[in-house]
Image (cartoon, rainbow, N blue to C red; front, side):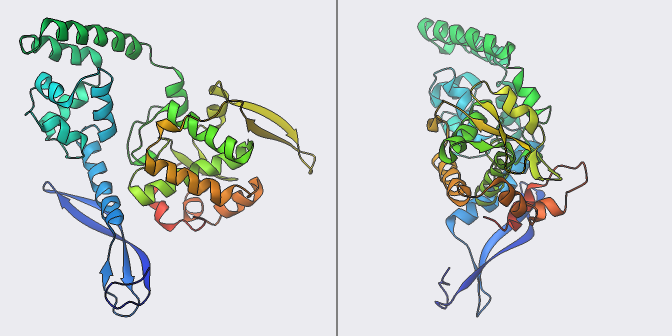
Length: 328
């Protein structure tokens, strides 16, 4: 990076800092460039967003306020406009739209949004706002609520088996826990690498989540990671691949005489489930490690602070380790 101050080289640096947001202090890892000559510091727009996102994520979790993707999904699942959602929930006309754009709700409105992620509770808000809706609108929304309630009451048991009881928090990089997104990430790497041994897939998932967290303040898969003998792995990695119907595990005899498990699939990934930023991260990881063997990527992961500091202990790898990644 060239410094805008002197035109000389600038070095990327990371530093732990504190920021006060709504009268509360939060720690975060600030990323910035420093002019090699004058030591003046500067950031890019992307860095500013990643830095402040770390703080916002902590505030949302502490006060049980849904994330932007959850707020958008809540409205879309019922097929309603932001204006109509504001009316049903008793918000100002533009408030729901602002929340979708990233503005953080007040604690009281945040609790309403959190509660309404449960369709049984959202139904009471719809019924209480019946006078503000036409008969046709009301019946249509109630019909949709009934459908969502059935889905909610029959939550995929795989959700807990894969992600455990840990919900969206610092341990999983503040990412939405989505089987659909996780499955398509695995399919993406299988497609790009023509089949992937599970050892390598574990590392691809690790580098994907931690790189995305470093760049955007949030991971992608929603999984938690541990440092075991063979490097960083998702906490329930052994369950993940067996619980996804579209993933086959092919036993392959290696040159060493041992048996390895290669992940294969006849299905193609659905890229529509990813944001543009997530796709950039996936493409970056695929390009970096496409020709890297399972043993090579394992060796690289053993050099990471994320593995060295957490190996041999039961504590999950902290996502702050993302700022010391060496391989990406």
